[in-house]
Length: 118
Image: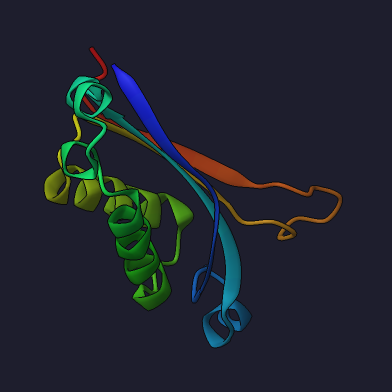
């Protein structure tokens, strides 16, 4: 399996369980890995034969910036499900980092994997 990745996608959204979190937008850092077969793109050198990572990025931003999930787990699950359904990939890994929410910890996050990684 070949992997196309998007790293450090910044999205501002409403997320969190505390009342004060529901009133503000917080920055999330999202990494996505897309499992695909890139052999056609390798042979053809044609963009139509690969995953449109700009479209993936735009879709993830759309989902994230308009959602109001309480948990980053729920948001990551929604992103994974949508990307699997809408793009020609077999597997996805979504990492969401919500920095600065716990004292003395820089990075807090979740990793969700969905699909067939074989």
